Length: 363
Ligand SMILES: C[S@@+](CC[C@H](N)C(=O)[O-])C[C@H]1O[C@@H](n2cnc3c(N)ncnc32)[C@H](O)[C@@H]1O
Image (cartoon, rainbow, N blue to C red; front, side, top):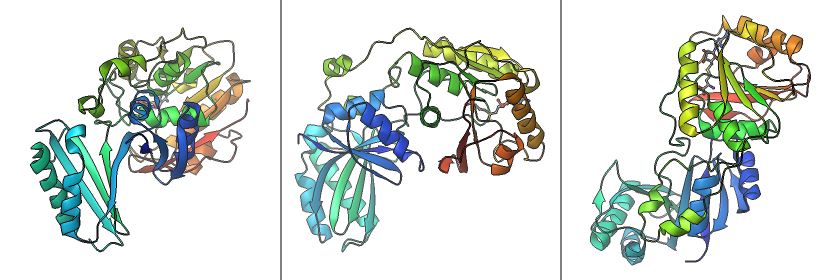
């Protein structure tokens, strides 16, 4: 099997941005559909996608596909999949099957047939918490088998141990930075940085670091994994030319940011400061990007109007020439800043809340 479909999962609303990132990386993007992007490639493409993409949550490899009209056929054809070439003997595996518009309509029975094939071919242990997850989609009688090659969600870069309240996922932060036109050549500042996600992610982008350099992936336990070939895909970081900054009024948050940046090996700079005191951290204008509290997850909304207004006032009075971007759930909170926002970006699902990116031209 030389090339196959590889599905890059992302938060709904961010598909186009992820497709752009994948194209920039040289991947062969074939479609963007709700929830993700399909690329065509081989196992090295799977490794590269996991290691380099900043915006994908998981990478699924579609390793088998056949038609089955009834369960006995599913059973027989599932046994014929060359499992031994893919999974190690005795691997723990979880199977999730879904059925749509198909003669096989019983997902539980379908799951069980595939599980049996795995037990009988590679002596698999079937478990809910398993080393490998296989998704079987049966649609119009076509059975598609996908393996989750990432393991833990890719927003876990592997060097952030401390998170504050309501952290932004690294994958979302990376795509919001992309949406705001951040390319690492101008300074970046988050004045409500919490555990430092934006400044750290931006510093990594500016230094051209591999997103997944500090973590492991499920594909590293597959039969076809070659550690030397994978090592060769790792890039070399370059010195960061434009600085990234974060501040927050919460001293605990800043301690976390500093510790997280150290673990990530980036030079993001942090400071304790309330919004009412912020000034540009550097002379060269750049991008202010932040996700201020939005009430849905921490506390109530009403007191936040004052905070957004004070943020907007500070931007207008002190940050001439800077572009401003905020991620928030409430159009009325964005409006409370009084900033000249361009039309808001697409609605993005973030941990049960729908958020959008609001950005300005240079002030
Ligand atoms: C939603 S959190 C940001 C999370 C962050 N992006 C992360 O990934 O960890 C909002 C942050 O705004 C900070 N904040 C709230 N009011 C503030 C104020 N008046 N001045 C400065 N920071 C403030 C909070 O301490 C909190 O860390």
